[in-house]
Each structure stands twice: as C-alpha cells, then as structure tokens.
Length: 330
Image 1 (cartoon, one colour):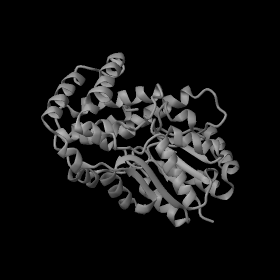
Image 2 (cartoon, helix red, strand yellow):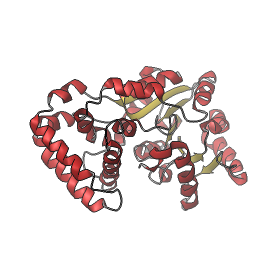
Image 3 (cartoon, one colour):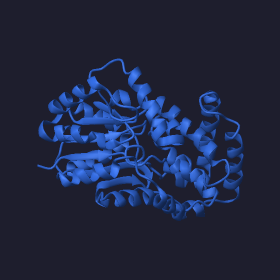
Image 4 (cartoon, one colour):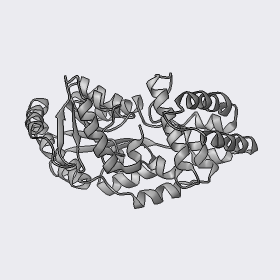
C-alpha cells in the first residue's frame, strides 16, 4: 500500500527563500523584504480577515515589477539553488519504497516547478503560487511608480521588531488603503499565495484525489506558512513533522527534527509505513533519549508536550546554520 508525504519546499527541501533572493536582485531589496516579511507575521498573528501567512508573495510583487524582476530571473535562481542536506537522498528513498511524494509551497511557480522537477517530484503533485507578470507590468503607470518609490523610502527607515507598531500602521495604509485605488492594486488582489489555510486546501485536494484522509498523511513544514497544515494533519491523527522549524510551526507539529540533514527522517518514516503513529512515536522517543550529535539528528515527540522552549532553541540554532540569512524570517 502506498504512503503519502507532502513537503514544504523552502526549508525542508531547499535552504533558500526564493522571494528573499529575488528581492536581493535590486538595491536594498533585502531590507525591504525583511520589513514586509515581519509585516506578514504581524498580520498573521492578529488573524486579519482574508489574509494568510505567506501572502508576502503578493505584497512584494509590486516591488519586483517596479525593478523589472522577471520570470527568467526566478528560473535562473532556481537553476543555481541548492538542496537541503539529505533531501535528494530522502526523496529517492521514499520513491523506491513506493511513497507518493507531494510538495505544497508558497513559492512562485517557475521556481517551485524547476526545483521539484530536479528532485523527481511530479508536477501534478505540486501546488504553488502563480503570478500574472504581464498583467502586473501593464498596470505600472506613473501613479504607481511614484507611490511605490515613496513606499520604498518609508520602508527603508524601519527595522523589524523594533519598529513593529510603525510597520503595522504604515504598511496597513499603503497596502489596504492607498495601493488598492490603483490598477496595480486591483491586479495584486487576484494573487493568492499558497500559504496558511490555502496549504490545507491544497492538501485536501490531493487527499480527495487519492481518496486518502488527512490521518494517512505525513507533512513536513518549518514556518508560519505551514502551521495550519501541520495542525490539520496532527489533529487528524497523521504525522506532522516540524523540520528546523521556528516558534510559529513547532507548537502545531506531532514531532520534530532539527538537523543539517533531513535524511534522518528515514527510520521514522519506515516506522510510520509499518504501523503509523504508534511505531513512529516509539522510534522517536527512543532516539530522543540519546539526543542528537553536534548539528544532526535531534528528534522530539511533540504531541502532548507543553514545554518546548528548549526544543525551540535547538531548532533556532540549526535553522540559522542551515538556512543562513533566510533563517531569521518568520
């Protein structure tokens, strides 16, 4: 019988954050992205209506268009992107054992499709974010140019966390009052990044297609865009894995792995394949007793655990090691 596993792309399978790398292609783009990424966290934490974690990819789109970033730039980044340690080995092993492998990612389509193709994940098993590049460019008039340049100047005076109140007030005004009055703003409203509840919806579509309830799935995520998917699968009795995760994802997972290699999941997934949660829990708790070594193999069973502060710190350290600059993002 086939088993079903779904990965987030950025973090579990590739250390890069595609949107962050794209923003770095123009001057100060990295700083602008860090502020907008923090704004994304703030909107998610306040549970703003009709907003999902990962909608950052819609919010940064105007700035990418302003600086002539193209689909070719995205494809080029994908060609040079690396994989998380052990990712290729793990995907190959899963497929050799008859698993069906899926990927649900907030990432833009040209990037997601190239990387998953390299890993041997079928395109029809991938859900990602599409962007109407041509339409967005056509809506970039004089009014939009002036508005975006002013917004950039304002954003560059802000620092994440330290200026959270100001970030919230200023970007609320820009994104929800000023930009929507323009043609570009109208086009941006149609962009629906695959994060948060949309990840759950994408997983549910795959589950329905293969007639497999969420309790039969394994999902792997690491950040705020994944927590709803992790929560849904854990609640259904499936296996929700937080890999090198942050404090937004860990509380919603069944188990976690902090490691420079994701292939340390092999034994756990073999246990799940044999008798699902019961055997997986047994293997993880046994390995948890011995702990990890250096920067590898820190496994923890999280279901039912209340105090995870120490685990968060382990993940934070290894997340920064593996993901470098992207590790500080929500």
